[in-house]
Length: 209
Image (cartoon, rainbow, N blue to C red; front, side, top):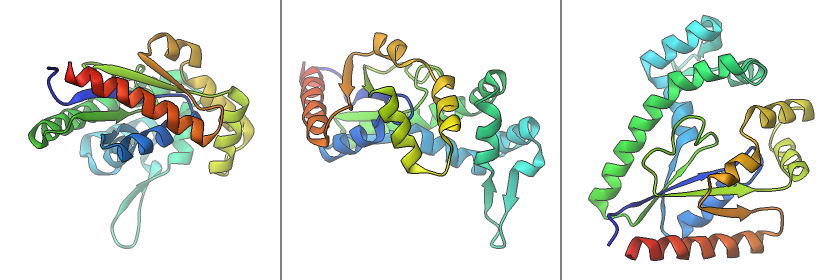
């Protein structure tokens, strides 16, 4: 029998629908580690990361509210890193080792709880080295124009900004080459749910081998 938990990575480009896939997997009983959410939290809680971000973007990137809570100007950071690959790589090198350590803690907790499947959701799973030690990789895909429209519906960014962010990520075809399973999210929600259930069943069977 495979040691529990089975460690599953879920990734996909902007607007692909990887978060929706992870919500479906959570409903099937999988534990979810949201790497991007953890990274955002570390940017306002980890002193070393805060200092590093100020070194990259200037002290003005942070703001403290009246109640003392710290916030970071993510729009300013995004505007710079998605047009400067070197700066983006520096930011990733600063943050992702800490995200990896947080994931290891999540793995330890999942083992203590007897969790069968732990899913790591990450937008830049391969680029950050976050695929290390994972048992299974799922890549969520969708037609490029559909991904652009979904991203535009989520916020106030321009079409040009969305395209710049997509181009800063690995091409979808490159992600697919490294996938164990591909879930296409170009169709209906029912289709997505059915395909996600199918992949879940295959992974669950793997865990029982």
